[in-house]
Image 1 (cartoon, rainbow, N blue to C red):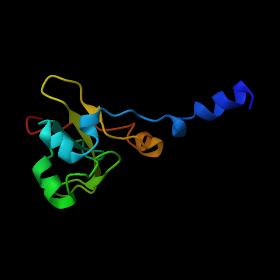
Image 2 (cartoon, one colour; image 1 turned 120 degrees about the vertical axis):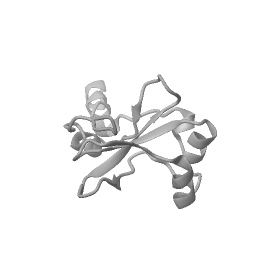
Image 3 (tube, rainbow, N blue to C red; image 1 turned 135 degrees about the vertical axis):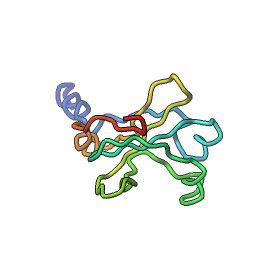
Length: 117
């Protein structure tokens, strides 16, 4: 295969694989590392804490939050939420989306709303 053809195949967004730190592989790992997890709504912009203990109880410790969506918990909001994770306070928040179609859907987001907004 010519190098130009190989590059055109490998450089598409669908073929770029995100490398996640080991502690992000499952909710059990995140819980053991005391990681911080939030959910953000694509419709209302609300940013809320996600309780890892609750997620483990519902889905098991091997459950991955990557590319997982849930309904927003805000009253009267019909939006979808995605997960963000940080190793600890003061560190960068990582959006747990890998699927290029989902990443495109969540490119345009409303401003973040929190309890203090």
